[in-house]
Image (cartoon, rainbow, N blue to C red):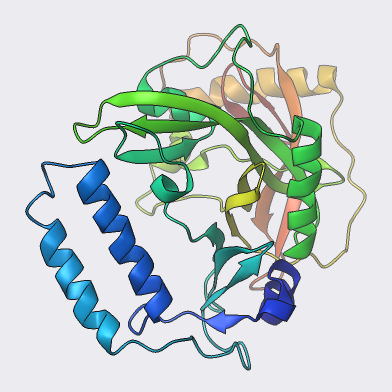
Length: 330
């Protein structure tokens, strides 16, 4: 699978190579030297002012004995690979015994998107932008997204990427504009550009996203000594007019393709069942809720242990977003 993913993502004719951070090639080292020289001259950072020359000197020493190229991918037994896509360099991290994968553009963001008076630039989804800056994103939709793709076109490209990494049975959970936040040496925001999109996909059953609730916060589970959580298979992709910027994903499970017919409760039956069980539940696990209003009930799927070790099942559930209360159809 690793070989297939790498050859699907990279321009194979341009070569796919094993990346070794301990034995970098001349091109990579020189790029880092240029990055520090540019930062020293154009984006002086008082925190690192005395360090630039030392870093550049160390890199020049490393450069002297560095190889000219990385070894070819070979049998794909390594964890880290580099290659190109439409002339831009990317790095693929795909460790066999890990569920976490990534595919990232290698160019430093400040070299990729330079801005006067800025020292750093970071791309954020709308939610992350609001959380990091404490500023509400454009509520009136007056800021024009500079991306040459429409949101629909960008989503199609994101889903092409998902196909290339073998992500099946997924559904779009969230999407937003991509915010490039520029900060100076004092970490003050000097500019924000809206250019590109952020997409988040999750595992789906019959195109219905599975539950991504924080189950470790449920009252009865908090009472247990062991930490309890349900893994979420999530695929996060950011892109601009030039294509993918970053992609991070995790693959916990592989679908067997098997399904079983399940009878679920109707909404009146669900309310009747809830009125029986909820009061008893909160006698045992008291909490801050005084009343629960089922005015936003959603069908989703909850991951449970299967019959055999290492097997799992998704079961249909309904929950109320208002109360954040889970009601299993068992």
